[in-house]
Image 1: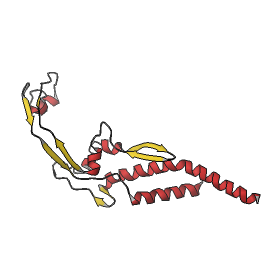
Image 2: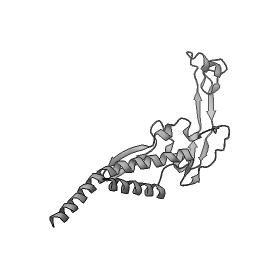
Image 3: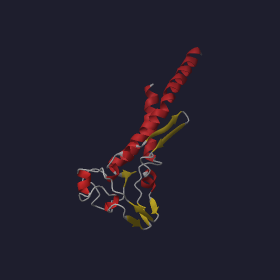
Image 4: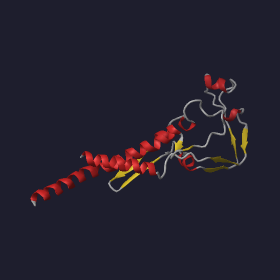
Length: 180
C-alpha cells in the first residue's frame, strides 16, 4: 500500500514540476508561431494579400518586415499559471492591429505650415533639391492642404486563434511532462 502511495506522490511531484514550466512553454511556442507567419507571409496556410503598390514591395523579404518593428513587438505581455497573453504593437508600432485585422483608416482633412530647418546640411538637404530640408518639399512658410481620405488596409493576419498552434502547444506540453 505504501508503495502505491509513493508512486502517486511521485506522479504528483512530477506533475507539479512540469506544470510550473507550462506557462513559459505556451508563451514561447505562441510567439514562435506568430513570428513564423511573417516569414511565410501567411496565416494558417492562407497567403497574405499581395501589395497593390509593386514599387514599394521589396525584391526580397516582406514589406511587413522592412523595419522589423512589428515583428519584434510580438512578445509575451503576461505569463502566469492562470494566464498567458501575447501582444503585438507598442507606441512605436501603433499599426499592429490594423495589419492583423484589416480595415479602413480614415484620415481627416488638415492643413499644415512647414518651416525650413536652417541647420540641415549635407545629404538630407541635397535630397530636397539642395534648398534645405522642408517637410513636404515646400518652401519655408508655405502651407499644404490635405484632403480627407480613407485607406483600405487588407488583412495580413499574424496573430489569433489557431488550431495548429493549439496542437503544437499540446505536443510540447506532453513532451515536457514526459521528460520530467
